Image (tube, one colour):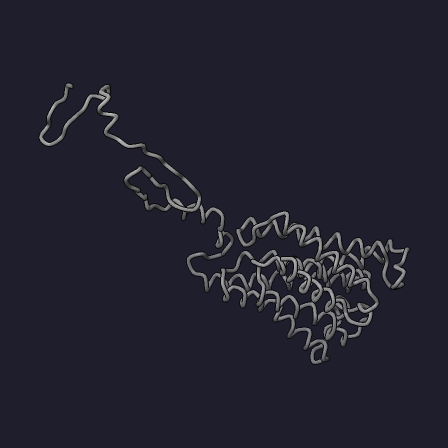
Length: 306
């Protein structure tokens, strides 16, 4: 057999059968859980690289919408200020429409729908972890103080009262509107943007309950047999609006990596929306404010299905 010696190195011609017989079978395996492995019958060589890290970053771009990713504290403060500006701009807008004669009940429900959903759009601006959640909760938390100040009559603001109450009585702010902002504040603190419960709760409270009243008042001629204050079309509109809004926010948050959208989650949103619409249609929702019954139902049912 032809061969050549170079010091201690022996070079074999590639055509020689004995060259191939000196090597064992070599297999290469790639998977998404571990780094690439080179495996043979006698040894395993593991390449330690940033392969996994790159995949994980692609799936979970947590800081994708932060204002200042290099300075999370300042970024969260700026996000709080910007979120407050969005919320107060909407409140001022609806206060102006109330002053200019827009139907009071319609105006109130437009406030009800828009504030919570617009605030939830701002959540990706905050950092992950407890600090981001707490600073985000300050936005509705400020409105808790406003509801108390206006509802107790300490400060007079007729435009705000007209835009957020049924009958124009400032003391109404201590009921439904106060429950509304308190609910969103607690959702920020305890569930935040990584939980489908927070999505279902806010979407059914804002979109579901708000659309139900608007549609029910205009098209709800056929009343529910067990509650003449509610209509069939209003309940259907509530379940549909809450469900569709939940799906929309599921895709929105999954694009940032906060939740992982799935058919199981979609089914869970459907169950929560149907349960919330059912409870809202009961006579108890006339006696107890639906800004309490709807969130509590979403919370309890969501805890079971998610």
